[in-house]
Length: 262
Image (tube, rainbow, N blue to C red):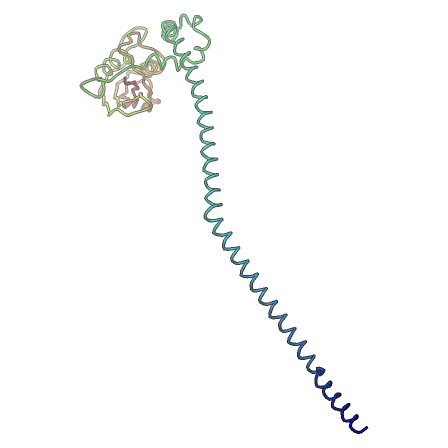
């Protein structure tokens, strides 16, 4: 009997050693929690690394591919806009050129009537209505001449003959309306395409304002009948004392002579 009790005690002791204590369970649970926290931290750090790597990839991709592609797209759009604008401008210029050519043909056909209307106020009704509203253009076209000279930049003989024999003569009486004191011809300058101009400085003595006005009318309103000596002028300045309009004066006149080159 005593031996059986001893055997039971031994068995109970062995079973007690095999069962974990309460403190051992707590320690195991704490260790498991620590493993979970560590794992969570590792996963969190890993995702952060993935995010940073992805962000760097997006930045590199954007700088090397997206931004250049966008710049190229913007450049293409600008070029397309410029081309469309040029096409539209070309169409406008083409229509304007065609209209100018038709107008020039009318001017050449009715040149005599235009000159008669400008100089003598006759045959004006015979002029095409389209030209009546473009008299300034028609007169400029008729007056424009080729003043180039193979031996010099400008044919000064034509200029001097035009001034002395046309601008300084009364269109009705053909008497001199002024006396040249000085003429200064500057260097030719390019104006547009094959058009050029040369500046002139004149000092002319006029007996009164009527003589000066006759000179100005010849410059701005009339057309020289002889086509070989026609010159298109534009007056820039006239230095005249209007208070002494009835007395003789020396007048400084600045003007440009326009011409075309072949």
